[in-house]
Length: 193
Image (cartoon, rainbow, N blue to C red):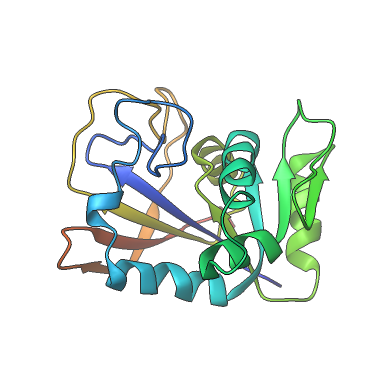
């Protein structure tokens, strides 16, 4: 069975919204992860991409990524990776997913994700998509959570978890602090037996 992994930039106050320069929300604060994303952190991200052959995206991240990455030069390595990767989009409002190699998932989310995980192939990575990550953690569908913790407090923006979510225990697997100041914490959710 394929693993479903997540890599998510997060601030010290739990904000996951608008970490990249191409994000369309938080116009005065977007791109907050960039000062902490150096070549070492980029290597971690590229390693995650190499171990997967599909991305799972929520609607907002999908729309932001499609607009940003499809507009990048064809010879941009990262744009090539993002544009050519198989993408599965979770949305209740989109009617179609036009970005290259994109498939819209409809119907029962648990069944759709379970079916994807049971297909042959490499791991499936969730990139960004904080709302989706929070939902999938509650549904016990994520196998590995990588929090890319930036030493910054925004004071505004969507947080990973809303008030009142069910208690979940996660097992620390590893952590590493990079020269840029970012700490990457890898966790495995402990699922009910």
